[in-house]
Image 1 (cartoon, rainbow, N blue to C red):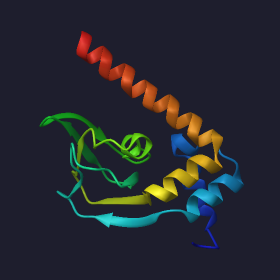
Image 2 (image 1 turned 180 degrees about the horizontal axis):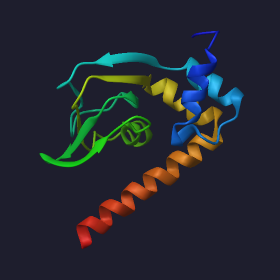
Image 3 (image 1 turned 60 degrees about the vertical axis):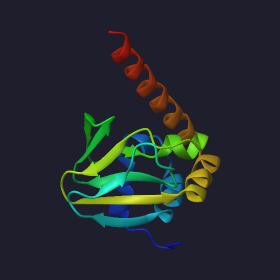
Image 4 (image 1 turned 120 degrees about the vertical axis):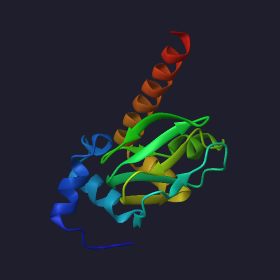
Length: 143
């Protein structure tokens, strides 16, 4: 766990929509979690139907999201994925592949749970986002 977090990193984290309502103390706690990793273009970060063991926050680059072999979207800086499997223990819902070189922060299942337990602000934002994704998916299936 890091003890000293650069101001620029806290400012960057504060601009991520999921963390935008967090206090400086919460941002420091978040920044102490996880491991920053660089990912090569073409790397598969998650595989649909596989077990999920980590949460990803995309810092730089673009990644493709595909479901049943069909591209459903492109993710960019500030986007995140992997939360559903950590919340309910179910398999991955999509395959995520790096379209460009990426920089991501990876949180283990225990770090992710600790983050949600420590910050009701983040837990609420995550719940709102997951609900929005579910509504979008349901609307796409109906119409």
